[in-house]
Length: 335
Image: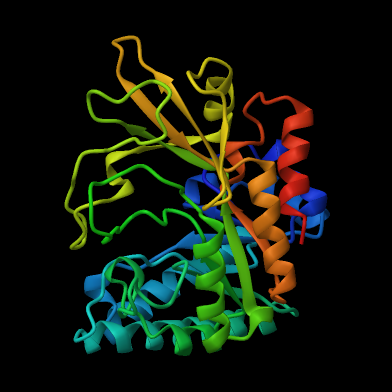
C-alpha cells in the first residue's frame, strides 16, 4: 500500500502493510521514522512540489532538483513524490512542457543517486482522479497537464480519487454529495488505463469526509442538503464550501447524528446529518470500510499496481478503537 502521511503518528502505522510512505513536508521526516520504515522494508519518499512560476525556467528547475536531491540524500530517503496541483490552461505550453522537462530531469537525478547508493529509487506523481475534465475537457480542476507523457516517466502514478466535488457543473442547485463516488472513480480509472500502464497506477482513497452546511430550512432528516454557491476554477458549485474532517473526527459524530449513517446507492458511499447547537443542519459524506473496500476491489479487477490512502494520520494514532482501524486497513487491502 502506498500511503501518504501529513503528521507524525508514524509509530501507529501498519508498517507490515505499507510499501511506500510519502511524507508531506520535511518537518515530518525524522531519522527514527526512516529507520523504522526501512526495517519494515517500506520506502520513505518526500511529498513536495515546485512553484508553477518557476517550472518553465531551466535554471530554477536545476536548482530545485539539486536542493531536493541533496535533502533526500541527507535524510536517507528513497525517492520523491511530486504533488503539483496548480491550474494549467491548455494554451500554457511553457508550463506544460516545463512539467515534462521537470519530471525527466528529476528522473535522471533520482536514477543517478540510486546508482551511487547501490540501489534503485522511486519517482511518483500525484495525479487527478481522471486525466480528462468533466464533460471531456482538458483536465480536472483546470489542470491541463500532459498526463500521458508524465505517466510514461514515473514509477508510480498516485490517482487521487477524492475531492471529486471540487468542480460541479451540473444544472440545478448546489447540493452536498459524495467525496469519492465509486462510479466516477471507475470512470476516471478507465480514462487513466487508456493512456497509462495499469501496473504503474495506485488508487488513492480518502480517510476523511466532508461536512457541508445545509441552507436554512433543511430538515434534520432530509437527504436533500442544498449548499451555498461558490466560485472555484470556473465552477459555481464546489466542495470548497464544506470542511474536511478526518475519520477519527467523523466516526464519533455518527452516534449523535439526526439520521444515523445512511447508504447512498448511486455513489456507493455513506452519509448522515448532524444538527449544530444553534439548530443548523449539516450533512457529512464520508467513506467507511464498506465503501473503501468496493473501490479497492475495483482497483484489483482493473489490474492496478495497488491502493493507497490520504492520509494515514486521519485514522492511525488518533485514539480510534483497534477494531475500527483494523477494519479500515482491511478495506484498503481488499485489492
